[in-house]
Image 1 (cartoon, rainbow, N blue to C red):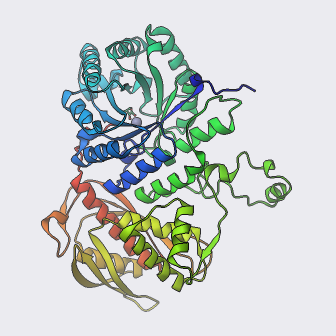
Image 2 (cartoon, helix red, strand yellow):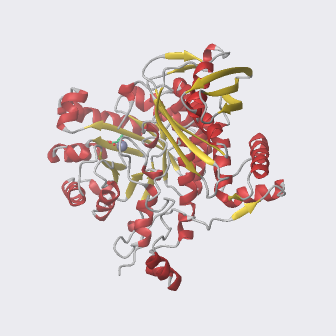
Length: 536
Ligand code: KIV
Ligand code: ZN
């Protein structure tokens, strides 16, 4: 067994949940949600937070700028392409940071240079030098990435890496942009570049892997074994297409198998579950039940043989302790007699910091829930507070819903909404109660969005359990107005969004989820990114 722990074995964790992660189709976060995620990432010891792509939209710029102002420990990074305007915008966004980084990239693979950039390699080479030089005028922490690095010709890759380091890049990231490589190949690529590039010792190397073939984590760790010392990853593995390497998996792999992977990180792993839940709540992306480390079943033992073994000794079937990643025993929390003090205490224990109106609203909703539900569990509180956080900025809110359902149709829903302070009511019929509910929403907020996903699951056990509904909507280019709203409430489209709603009544949960998705479409409108801007 090898013992790590010298500085040379310290691996930096570069979190790109707010940039590559937010590029996942449907994963929009509001400004406030981004700040909240960034605060937790900082608190749990992430070394670098890639907070966004400042030139992509005003919203991205503002998020990076605000996160730069607030972040206490981590380096705050803004992404930019190679053009001057991109770099200047990224520099402006990270200006307030205690420690700020510009991450500039350009494609270097034959297929990207020919078809995407339509540039000759020599021109790309010149742009590498020019972009890194320009970024260095703003900060001495500059990262350079050859996009589609794993499909780039080796000679050209080495030339560009050498030039980027000479121009002042302090980190060289070699991304597997399309999730194409395999561990042995990625390992060999880093070895080759580090050996062949004469000034390679002047920069830190970084891995950035996508999961198209399910190898992002394995590839990232192979790059680390070959000498890279930074991993770019995202909470819950969210990111373009199949996602990025998952933060919790790379961190726990190095912790649990430190004998085989003798590297250390600065992550407080007891916060992994909390950050996973927060990211799932704000993106409305459910975490798959069997997801490594943070899935609901990651520490559950079902078969009799396993349970028997666990009772005799936990190490029979557990390679890490649930507490190591912040998983707690499901506990019965409080009932309708629990007061505000106990509620705040429970929130703190679950890792939430609410104040002001948000706390008041959450407490009122907890009381209402406790009145309706005999046992209130941690999961109930989490669902309730996550929804409170996710809907705090909503312009369209559900006021009331009455549904007539049963064997004698047609089913009918009467809904009242608060649209930016104006109250509107509508009644609609449908083929079943969910259809009637959604038709009422469509009558009140006419839109062209297509329902792509409607998923229901119970938050806890029992017939009085809260239902959590996920709704995904996708629009393709129309603009609509919510009834009674000002023109600013136009729902502009061309995007996919997902939202969740929780309530003991499945139909109310469904209505909240659908409205949540419409609210997110509005957020998208304010931050529309031209397609060409979006980096992989
Ligand atoms: O996947 C990729 O190539 C990227 C770069 C911007 C680093 O996300
Ligand atoms: Zn990427």
